[in-house]
Image 1: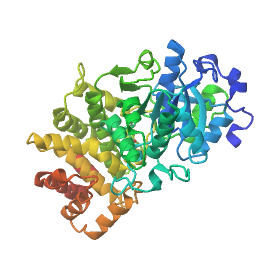
Image 2 (image 1 turned 90 degrees about the vertical axis):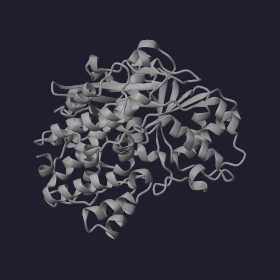
Image 3 (image 1 turned 45 degrees about the vertical axis):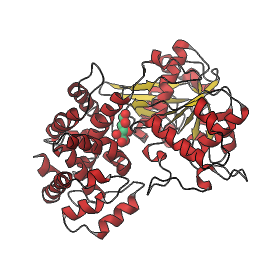
Image 4 (image 1 turned 135 degrees about the vertical axis):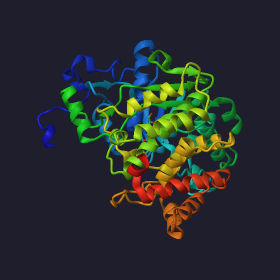
Amino acid sequence: MGVTAGLATLGLGTLGQVPPPARPLVRPGAVPAGIVHLGVGAFHRAHQAVYTEEALAKAGGDWGIVAVAPRSTDVVERLDAQDLLFSVVTLSGEGTQARVVGSLAGVRHAPSDPDAVVALLADPAIRVVTLTVTEKGYRLDPATGALRRDEAVVGDLTTDRPPRTIPGLLVRGLLARARAGTGPIAVVSCDNLPDNGRRLGNLVRQALDLVRGADRGWVAQNVTFPSTTVDRIVPATTAETLAQARTALGVVDHVAVGAEPYRQWVIEDAFPGGRPAWDVAGAVLTGDVAPWERLKLRALNGVHSALAYLGALAGCETIADALDLPGMREVLGRFLAEDIATSLVPPPGVTVDEYGESVLERFANPGIRHRTLQVAMDGSQKLPQRVLHTMLDRRAAGAEPRWAALVVAAWMRFVAGRTDDGRPLPLDDPLADPIRTALARRAATPADTVDALFGLRSVFPAEFAEDPVVRRLVADWLAVLTRHGVSGVLR
Ligand code: CS2
């Protein structure tokens, strides 16, 4: 790599070259493992790994993280080569800062060594499992959301063929734990889904039902599925992120991640085997995550998706560019005030107004180059909790949620595949095929397009799709978007 010529790579042997304030808060490799994390993406590294490191530094405990990659071998090889060290570059208008994080205690590649992962889940030292597998990780059959009754789910137990899905892996690990008589464990979803703990628990129970003779009683008594709300903007790493890390650290980090300064973690406190002192690292431990979750999914992620679809259609590369479109702030302000704020009760001491303002400020961070296409991805898995739930609640109150309907219309125009000036847009979505089929079948007028896409029942529930007011609101916006483009709508 030309740009990195002459510079050493981050690792235990080169940590001495890193400026002291950028070194890990704990002695790397010294903390024994207590957590298994599934999904070693950028978000985990900039969020749970950071909270855990701070908790370890301030309060101690055997809570090192063994990170398991469900697919990619790349990140495993790179972390291995860097002695499990990576850095987080904090991006803001006031410049960048980087710090190496030392909370990883191991890394594994699930597909090539599933037995090692199952053994870890049965290990008495492991008392917490966390997951960041994105929205689509919670569906087994993407088209219907149904579990298939075959070995793809839990593997073939008679031949010991390994599982190929996340719930399958969990079930195999939990059953091994039951057999070994190991102690209780918490399995914690850290993905942007409502009721994420209950959802994951249901998925695991459904997968358990596919295993003949499974010890369901043990799982019911020894495994909890706490819900959590996670928040930190962590765009995909780019060459620029790696260059920023290099400049700050003086060594090369091939797995650096860039993130905004803000972070939040609200966690339902249900950990039968104990947990790190995440609270001393700033996490909120509570009995009820739901008000935080609703606020975050609707007022942050919903507005993010609005910016992504409207911005992508208008040809904006980043979320910050989309926010700068004339009229955009006003439209988002009305979406927040008229549809979102009226759809939920915020957590005590928080107003949707202030929260919404802080969200827009975060989106405007000039240090973050979050691509509209990254946020636009997997829309079929994101729209329900981000936008449709807002609309359903407003409809139940007899209101007409116009601004939320605009986001649905923008998604429909986005999946049709062209920007306002005719350039192609990619459709990166687990439902890409059914979406294309629906559009090809009948998409002559905006109302036809709405009808066709509302037929995707795993995205648009019947009570939503069959509401004539909803259909009219979405079809009207789609007609305006088609005729006048995003700039016309914002005007
Ligand atoms: C974003 C989120 O990609 C997306 O869909 O809306 O990843 C967002 O950046 C995070 O949820 C912020 O916490």
